[in-house]
Image (tube, rainbow, N blue to C red; front, side, top):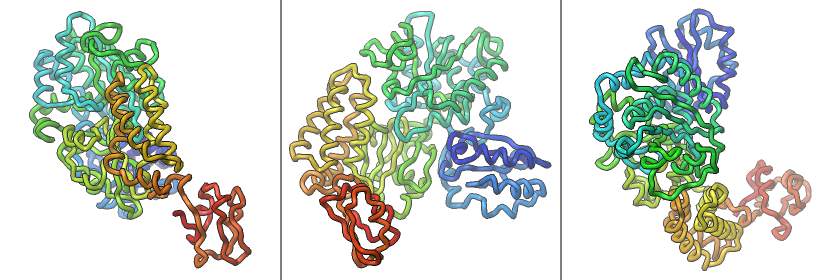
Length: 581
């Protein structure tokens, strides 16, 4: 038998490496290995037990080093019945069974640090097939048939970008992978590189052949050290096996692949800003046209796609573009990966065919809201996206339908919010992010986002005025129309969608000086219910400003004139006597 430990970043953070080390000295009649993230981040650390034929026998979840001795004993004896308390439940297992995995097809199944594991699962079969049987034009036609659109956010047809780069004049062309994943709550690209780096490499090989490039870069965030480590090893292993370098597989096709670690600037997710950074300059967007396919890296024709886009390519070649196009909707083909996070029961990575609804993903796969709370909204597309309310939960997931709500598909971040989330504060959070991440090159983004943030900040402090709503809408229009790049143009989306769907919350903050979700500290009011107060004095002792008075074993009271609304009393009270209003 074989025990495989999930060692993606989420698994390691939850204790997977400690679990591996605890099992290592106990090996007796079984082997031990690692894999990447299978996507069930809410159950980490995960240990899978396989038989000698590679069939999964049991999936153990939330394992700890203290479980190691009995897991080892059970596997050694061949009797796994004693591990039933650690086994995944049918309900949690449905998280995976309801998905369709293409980009994530190897994640959590193969060893990301062993090229042999990838080769054993049809790895590099697609590039072998392409170099033997396809012209570059035929590759582009297959991608066109698939309907694959860029998964980085814009949803632009992949074949069109490849075709433009191929037809651009010039002998020297470049291929670039955009792995600068900057959206809060998004971790799809990181998981693919950590769990299946060869799938990215193979997709890039096919794209480079199609456009005529001999040099390629993966621009990845420096905050992804595990992804960079595994990608470096994968590149070295691919070179050793003849899949990268000169005269690949004995043909005239050559490709050199290098890694560029970016400094974590959100704006470098925009392709021309990424190119500036790749060239050694400060990451700031360029005016378009010319587009990168005409004049990109060092002034040469260049093509840029993101990690998920490339991760689909080998599957499309192996199974045919028509098979990919058979999934999804009329205008959005194939599958899409989402990182579900926030107030969700089952958070992690989800890959589903386009055409399912938000309800299908959030409640059918994600299991609904934690703690029995009411669903309020989901933020789609990160800081460039928008908040979609409960009334639109049956919105179909495709580019057109999501755009109609005021949100965007984006790279796939899906932040779920419950009834305790203040939508004004949420808009402020994203504006704070985009304000700090603005490159500053154009005035509408540099100044406009700052002014919008200042207005939202005043509103959440109870200092807002009715005229602020009109100012916000005017600023949103100005930034949207005047910003230089797509990141600036979409920055107003969180404000526009919260104003559109949750205007009553803005009104309550301004007119009533009240936060309906009770999240904004400046608008909270605390009182002590005398019927519940035991007079234990704990709240008084925790209050930093002495706002609470009362005798021992007698009901206490809060002086609102002194209270700084820090919430320490509510946290300290064990009897639920402190009430926030």
